[in-house]
Image (cartoon, rainbow, N blue to C red; front, side, top):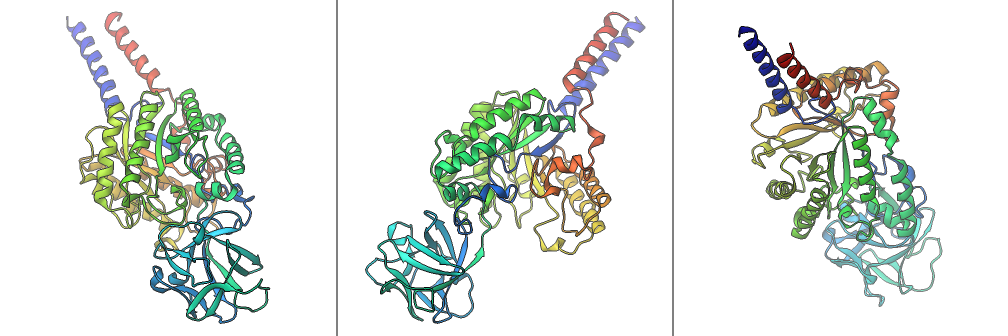
Length: 532
């Protein structure tokens, strides 16, 4: 009797251990209790800095949507300026340019453009030889201009053939007589490209035009991420991929202008490859309609942040979440859905974001009670604790933090030891604090083994990577590296692994998969109880 009792107790304890191990870990992650992930950045949402060659063939490629321009009269040696930044007349009277003298481009074709003022209005002319003002709320033919170029000089011409000129320091008009040459005349301006930093889906598609862009993206999507990449990730201990998508995926195969279809078929392939290698997928709404942060990876046309100001844009975003949840909720490779990537703290009010997150959580829960619903922190001046205090959802929720020792002047002159100490002294306490908060799990959804240290050695990069892994491994949900492939080698996960600048050997997927381990334990318990 005593022997039987001991056997029963042993079996019971083993069963409890198995139950606790499963209950307190992220489910079905190839033998690991937490997410060890890699982002598939630059694949289904274009980021030109990740693969610059995508933009090489665009004609007049230095003037694409969102390019910021300034124009200086060669006669008056003054800059074209919008009074009060827009909404009134246009003058040619500034010696030193600033925001009032800077125009954001909306590209119509390789030679036709519209110019948006700092306040949001477009340059316009009635075409009858009158003055040019910055008063149009939306552009059409009267707000469209040809640009003729010769070195750094340009002529600006209306569609009816009239040339814009600096008639006086107080007036820009569209009544130059004849065809101007490239000498110093009233219709000739020096053009300065102030910024050309937006290289996203909008710029690519509108820059090439639909047919060429479709072919460029077909080749990119079929080659940038492949089944062999999933094999590589599996073999190096990665159990999850975070896949950025754009809102237009819900309209595939024929999304609204200028976006190009095909990303949905690629996402389907990713889920199939993930299943082959026991990898789980997080779908991340990286680009929302209207843009949630004004940068290229949210497909912003000109840097504006319009998503939070439009009920239609927010509703469209929820429709996208509904589409993704309904399509993938019961796919065995789905781990979670991230409702929005990197909303701007400066542009997206917290109450708007929380309301959206609450509604998005309910949308996902219509289709799945187990899929993780992930809320990204606001980027900029915002504390992620604000999302824990918002009480968003109660089941399988996660807050996503993005940790970079970059993009802040604080890191500009820091040494390798300084960067490593920052991880332990700043990042680690925050992770520990949020782990202990009563709320969602903690996910370091983006991080990279790169910094502003010049000429860092391999050993220093290894130490920096080790410090980050030491801290981010403690996050209750796990982490995901940015990104799988990148033209900048230290951002490239594959390059880091193959060249041993980032060491992950301690957690290779040579371990026994979790489902096999549980089966072995169950069989052991059965054998011990019924046979021994």
